[in-house]
Image 1 (cartoon, rainbow, N blue to C red):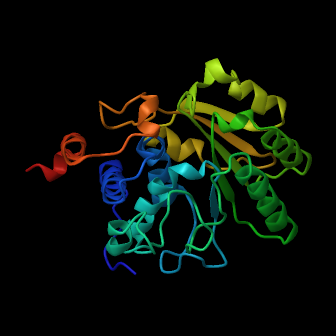
Image 2 (cartoon, rainbow, N blue to C red):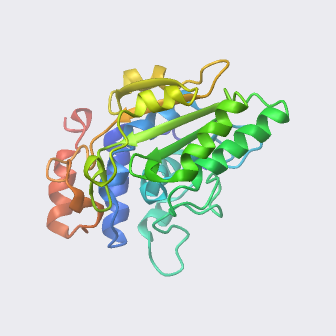
Length: 271
């Protein structure tokens, strides 16, 4: 367990992601980067948890349904001390604890995800169970905008509305890209906010990289389930990755790593 205060600054979390991706010769940098501000605000300001124990019973829960963005959460776990630097150094290596998708064996991770369309139904079930048990804890679920093509996602939303799961917050990482192209070209699900509202959710549509907005937007709504359509950019924070589908798949060589890191130096670290 870390004895220092967690550093959830986006530049710090993005550096951890770059280190993991380069160490493991791995992909999925772009989809992790679009999540960074959301993860920073959830762990830094919104979620209730015991920082000394990743899997404490009395805590809010975060389900990453778009499991290919797992490096963003691993970066936060490194700052909390739930993961060690050696875990990040060995990312994606033989025998490593950390792989390219979320796995429930990692303390703090709620589910195995990556097969899209499954995380939200599980999160809804968790919220329902907590509600029935009289718990005041909240379940946060991050989904991809492309993932919203899946039918089980909408069945889960109907169930959440039916049972007034006001302990559920669904966050759409709306970066406009999915595996094979623009979301509007594959299956256009817009307008997301109107659809969530039609399914009985209190809904906020906002800039998913504006941390001041997120600190308010991500809090649950009394009496009904809550949704946040977070407008993000795939690869956000590194200019040559931003809004580029290929950075779902490309790997970092030493030169690209150096270029990316040079864009992430926080001003307070340059003096």
